[in-house]
Structures are given as C-alpha cells and as structure tokens.
Image (cartoon, rainbow, N blue to C red; front, side):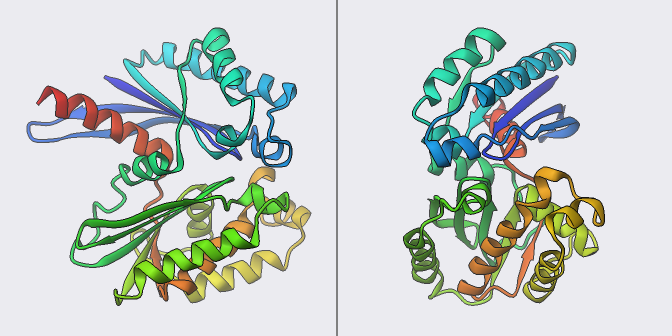
Length: 295
C-alpha cells in the first residue's frame, strides 16, 4: 500500500510517495520517492496578492506530473495541501479549480492552525523525552508555525505571517515580528529548559551543513556561527562555492534569522532537527485517519 503527500508551499511544491508498513501493533511509513519543484508561488502572492498565469501554469504542470507519478506508483490515497501563498492569493480558489480540472488533484488550502497540526502530526517527537518542554518551530516561505509542548501536552500554537520569501520580498511587517516575540515570551516565561524542534527544508539543510551527528541537537551558538558563515558569501558564491541549490541559497539566510530570533526570545540553547516536514505530517495524518477509524 502506498500513500502520497503533496505540499504546495510558498517556495517549492513537494510530492512524497511513501510505503505503508503494517505491523501487529503499529502502522508506519517508509519514504519511497520525494520530488521537489521550485515553483516559488510566494513571489506573486506576497507582492501582488495574486498568482500570475505563468506561476499558475507551472503549478498545474507540476501537479499533472505528480498525478502521473502517483498513478505509476499505484498510490491508494493522497492528500494535497496548500499553505500561506495560496491562502493570500485572491485567485487561490481559481487555481485550485484549475488543478482539479487539468490535473485531477483535489488541493485544499489549509489555514495556519491546520498547517501547524499537520506539521506536528509528523511525529517529530518520537525519539524525544516526553518529560521535557519543547517549542516546535516550522519556518516556511510565507509563514512560521510555533507550538509549545510541556510533558507531551500542547499548551499553545500560533501561525505568523513571517517567512523566507516574505522577508526576501520585503513583505514582512515589524508588528508581526513583535507579535511573534510577544507570543513566545508569554507562553515560555513559566517554563525553564525549553528545547527547540525545527522542521522544514531550511533547517534540514542547515543541520546537514553543521555536520552534527544524527540525533544530536544543534546549539544556538553553532547555528549563529553557521548563519555568519553563510552570510559572508554572496548569493552567487553560496550557489557556486557552497553548492546550494539556487532556490535554497537565498532563502536560507532569512530562515536563519527567524530561527535565531525565536531561539533567543525563548532562551533556547539547542534545537533538535528530526528532518521531517509538512509532507511527513500529511502521510501520518492519512495513517491516523484510516487506521484509527478502522481500529
């Protein structure tokens, strides 16, 4: 049995095809194929509040390719979610209708709260001590989702219109930064020794660049040093010298700025990076829906 997850983000669109593994007591998944296309819808959505015809065409072509791949892999169920770029585009529902008609894919535009729930469903906490306090931090192209957990219980969750593409396009607002900091201070002040859990493509890449041993947390000091190192290179050098993909080389700097701001504000000394993201959460959401209902 295979499931598929489609994440239509502000920077890239992703397809994850996963094999579903049923054991006597549990159901899990193994990643089979992951494909990423740098469509970058956020450039249109955050500047013009509208998805241009060119971007819409690129998105439809990507969805058609994803549909064909899902058919070839004989995917039995899928879920497709669009996040902040499509939320803000005034023609978002028109693009969704085109995708349904031309690619045969049902795409749902999810609200920030649902996005945070799906990301949390990725079970990033599996190998983490339930008795500790954790702040989940997911940084995307258009939004940042924060969720505070204490002893395995969700205490607070919020989505903020702060993201890497939004910052690059100078569409981030000072009051949003302030709102995020206020949220962090309010909900973390009564908790000591909070650890971060970072999800998303940028923190995954930063973790790889840090050469930390798998499973070990990345310290705030090391992340700050990594940010200073990357920022010392021009965009062209980050691509040609450091070997970063073109659509990663620019967004990784504002991503660092968001993570560092959150960690500093919450007085977090280190962050775990389980290298999961939205697509992992979508697969897990499908598993929980189907197998919980069946059981």
